[in-house]
Image (cartoon, rainbow, N blue to C red; front, side):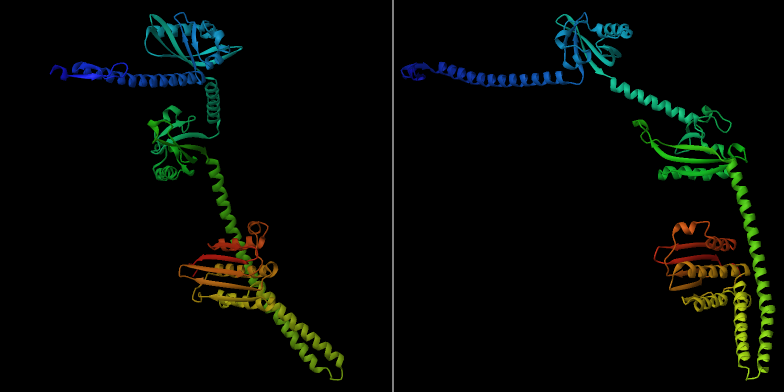
Length: 522
């Protein structure tokens, strides 16, 4: 029975002749299991070693190729390890730098600061940072050194990172120069420069203004310095620039109680805060220019212009009166004399015998010349001041002018109007009639048109008149040319009676004169 609890195991030659107890068989199986686990763990260890070698290789690559210098110093400050970047910063080969004291590369002016930094790093476990210059060859190299000291196997070592600050220092220098130039520009500018937030609070001012120092103005609101009547306008101006982000201008008077002073304010553009705490803060730059003399000159010019316009209106009225008088005298006196002359010539023609053919033909020719002269006199009188304008009004006068224009020039011309019941003052009637007269004359002289049209329309509030042709058009330069006396004269006539005058034209597409006149001339 005991033999049955055992088991046969093959001997070393593979013969199943050895009988092993059951317990020993279990131990053998455990050993085989452990052997398999050991093989697995050995595989994992080999894999870990491979990963470690790969990581170490990558670390070495990063260490050597990093744009930052890495150095390790011993307790005496001698270089024990360094990467290629550190060697380039010190301007010597890596092999030569090993065991060299690092302090010999520190600029003389920064030597004490570096030694104090080294002592401080030993005394505290925290990383210490310092900026100084290294003597790299014949040049001084600005660097930032971060150092941390530790105890390794009873030996103090210092691990350092060295960052080249050349580009940063150059950028800082350029920024400082720009800042100095900006300060110089701001403080020497002929205008006062302010910055305001959206509430109108002054955050910067370039120099004293309005009797206050720059320091006294900062933190106050700009609206506090203008009279009450100007505050709404100024507040709207500030709201406009912050709402649109576009440059906005306005003019205010009576600043700080001085009613004679005028200032021009130019806002914009908008600047966002540069740091996170001020990300929602917006400011605008304000240029302040005193324009008191300019406003005085502008008011003087406006008054002079008004006086000149009134004088021109009076001259034009006198001119129209003189034209009316001359036209009436020509029509009445000269016309009447020519009519008498015609009657006398007709009587004389009747007294000449029929046998005197030559004398009768001469008399007939003289009568024709008299008729032509009478017609010329009537036309001249009508051009000076058509009696129909005074007798029947504007619309019949324009209708007569259009018919006469078509008859004389052969250019098709028509009149359209719904203003038959509108009454005009003598000044407005004369101005509109003269504009039609000048426009039709320009069409003949310059437009090379085949047709024209005059429209006179009223909507109950305004009277709108347009003169259109299908000619070659006129350039914008010619429209705005002050030497175009006909256009300037038309503009002035309409302006004197409170109307608006516009010319619209394109090359090859004709010209359109548009006139808008308030319907209050009855």
